[in-house]
Structures are given as structure tokens and as C-alpha cells.
Length: 92
Image (tube, rainbow, N blue to C red):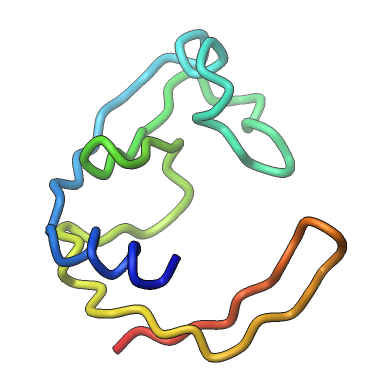
């Protein structure tokens, strides 16, 4: 996955921000992968899109261009159960 991720970064896909209502976000459950769910008091959400690769509810600070990341290097992986792994990585 590292090679594929680094290739996507090199494409410098556009990162765009849009706003969606709570109702619209709830119609697309893949947008809100937050473990604690959506904050109950918010009715409008910022959505961050990375080209056609990903679209998520805004959860923090974001870059403006993919090339700002540089390159990803995996330094360690840890098994966290049958289907899960934790990846430790650095940005070069």
C-alpha cells in the first residue's frame, strides 16, 4: 500500500472543502467514520475531499496540496487482531 499511496501523493490531487447538512451526511454513512459518532449539536459539517480518492467529515487540520506530505515510509507494523494492523510511519 505504501507504493500506491506515494503514487497518489505524487499526483498532487486537489483537496477541496465543502459544507453538508447533518441530514446529507447521515445519508452517506461512509463520510462519518468517527468512533464516537457525529457531534449531536452540529447541524452542518465541513467535508474534505481528496480528488476522487476520499471524502470525509472534517476531523482536524488539513494540507492544501497532497505534495505537502512528501513521501510515506513505514517503519513498523504491529498485529492488532486477526484483521487489524497498526502502522507506524514517517513522512520524508
